[in-house]
Length: 177
Image (tube, rainbow, N blue to C red; front, side):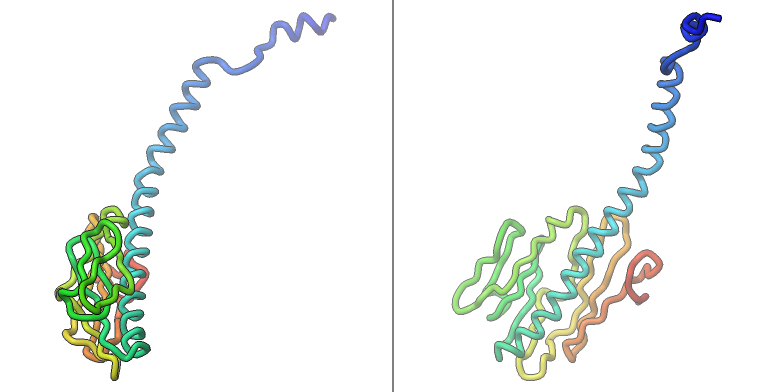
């Protein structure tokens, strides 16, 4: 028996058909995973921006007490500003830091356009936190709303406390509204 003749007749490598079938299966698996990846990415964007909004509302309250001056969170089309002074003293356009006039100081500017697809919607144009007790006037609700319809609400009470909830609590990492 000549072993070299036996090995010469055996198939070595992968045929073109086997390679095409493997690529087709890999394509189908990748295509089925893409929607869940996109949904997960959208959920992370919503959680990130809503967490930042809630933290900034609490930050404004603590800064009002620490600075012994009123601190505002003013909402504009594509951004919001945490600042001192009156509502009209600071403006932002979603393209960089806020611009303030007079003695007003911008403490933080957040451009919601960075969150791609998640918008900030408030039922008030500005919330002012009082330095004496940390109370707020007016009360309001600030919502982070993505394109897919789920939203996270930050409800600011008269006492200046922020409560976070979601109408679709099953899809969010917070309490139901």
